Amino acid sequence: MHLRRERELAAATWLLLSARDAKAARHEWATYGVALLRCGALFSAVRMPAGLVHAAADSEGREEVAHFLDVVLRGGPVIHDAGGRQFYALTPASTARYGQTAGAECLGSDSLLGVPATDVTEPDPRRSAYWVVPMDGPGTLCVPGAVAKLVGIGRDALDRAEGEGEGDE
Image (cartoon, rainbow, N blue to C red):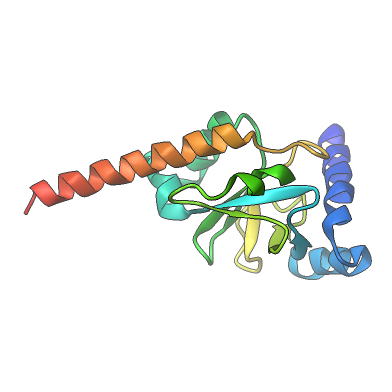
């Protein structure tokens, strides 16, 4: 447990490099559990609708989806914004240069992202977001190809479900 806390602190310090004002961001984390950080310098974020992620995981269960994301994204960090029904996979900053993938949107240098404090790893009605797959340390990000694969799996599952629904009429 001690090592996990050290990794959380190191990841938090790294993430705060993306804050306009690190002191204000620390205050936001302490007060709200979430701080707005800039995408594009240290990381990008791939925004995926919850429906797409649930279809890819073939589950809406929180633990099943978390396990699926952890495996498919090889331990890369993922934020869940339950209120907005979105998942955000953190990827290298360069990911935004490769454009959008159908079914997902890459947030680059012109975007701000609500990033939970690194110890917010469970849903909490007082907080808008949490780490469904926590950061394992500073600079640990999702591999863009793994995120693209996840989005493709989700799109295929949604297409199949839509096709099956048309046959039922």
